[in-house]
Image (cartoon, rainbow, N blue to C red; front, side, top):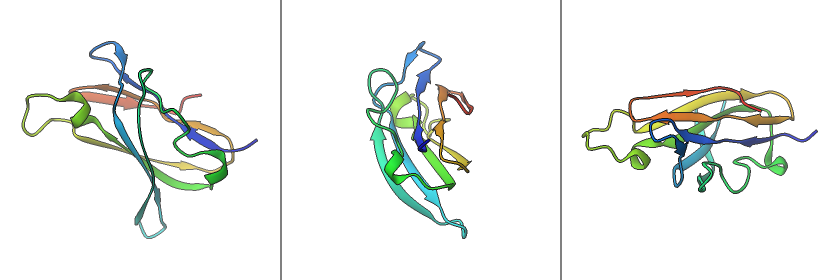
Length: 114
């Protein structure tokens, strides 16, 4: 099996997929440094049109997804309660990793999906 990474962002306040949300993927080095691997936006279904980390780029290690929630949510609060949401996680084996985000203006949750 080949490893790859996908995500799905759902707007729980509006009850719909979060379309147009910017997501960045970073690889985390042993010294804590970050390397940007990709920048994508969610489509009308709240997913990206291609895997965030495709199979031909997969390598075990520590990664970080950075969800640009503030720009998507567009709240009137200044500063916004939620702006950038980092989710740091490890991928140890070559399999499908799915990291969804359930989002609202004042909270979020995530889990390892399928």
